[in-house]
Length: 373
Image (cartoon, rainbow, N blue to C red):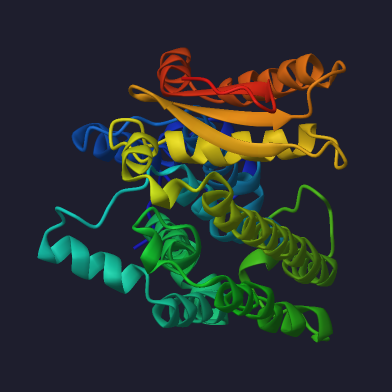
């Protein structure tokens, strides 16, 4: 039975507040769950996490309400944009913004759920089924005629996207993520699966769906033009999103290779006390900041300077020490350049967290032959 408060034409969106309320609740619910779960676990969201969750929530609101949710009621192109925003943008951003947690202390039900969510075969199957079945004629023309059907389909898109993206960017332990080479192959799936319904739309000689034949089109497109535009949206913009994901994965892979060399350069494994100072449960941001600070030092140091990187311990503080040849202005210039990059990176964190990081991690540039006690 159709729900009478759900609109079928665009003009009704301006005077039916229940639609906007439903879209607002659906868009805010994931962020509320993330914030509530993080608070219950005693984890604080970094500034980066807040930005990612906020951006994902904004994309969900745009996709479910105005303007994309508006267009999805009357055009196949609008529905395709809605699918793209929910599946390929909002879902991975929410997972990226969710604080990471460790494997210890998890109950059996939660471990089982996380094991299923981190299984790439399950995410691949669910993404394929969602891409093919939810674009079927019976689903679009019949099942989506009322509010329950449309909300169900959008929920399926979002849930299957979470299962797909979890093995890549999920907040679980690092060991549950896909290796980099396997992740590159895994990212081909959202590039391929939407191409099948898009190919049917583009190469079809007749309109496929009857639902959009009776709804007024604000773009005044013909049904065939709308169908072709919907296929174009799934082909090119969707491919661009996947290409960006591949680029970010390759970039992270290269940074990870650099991180492996950081431990050897600093000789950290030989000093268990230094490891305890850098990997602190009360300051989980410390080790990523160490990696970033080493990168800043590498970029600031001239390639022919002949510098050497080491570290010293000062009670509960680690000081990275860059040794340079004595004489000249390189020492002072490098110190200012490195400190400026360090402070710029710390602005990503709240002032309180940045101060804690400064307390535990410092940097200094010294001439050869000088040692800080």
